Image 1 (cartoon, helix red, strand yellow):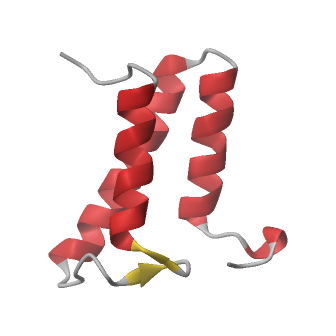
Image 2 (cartoon, rainbow, N blue to C red):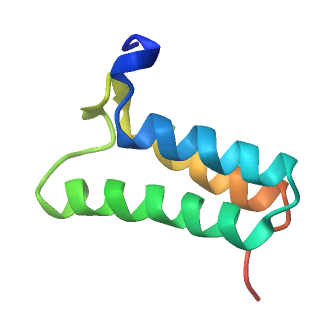
Length: 78
C-alpha cells in the first residue's frame, strides 16, 4: 500500500466518501462512491480484468468497496 502522502485518486476518493458518510453528507458520499466505480469501469473498458491492480489494490476490491459503501449506507438510488 502506498504511503499516506503517496495515495492515489482511488484511495483519496474512498477516504473522502467514508468521511462524507460520517458527516451525513449523503449526496457527496454517493457521488464519490460512484466516481470510484467510474474510474474502475474506465480501466475495465481498456481491457483490465478483476485481478488487475490499481494503486496496489485489485479492481475487484475497489468495486466491492464502492458498492458496499453505497449499499451499507443506503445510498443507492431507486
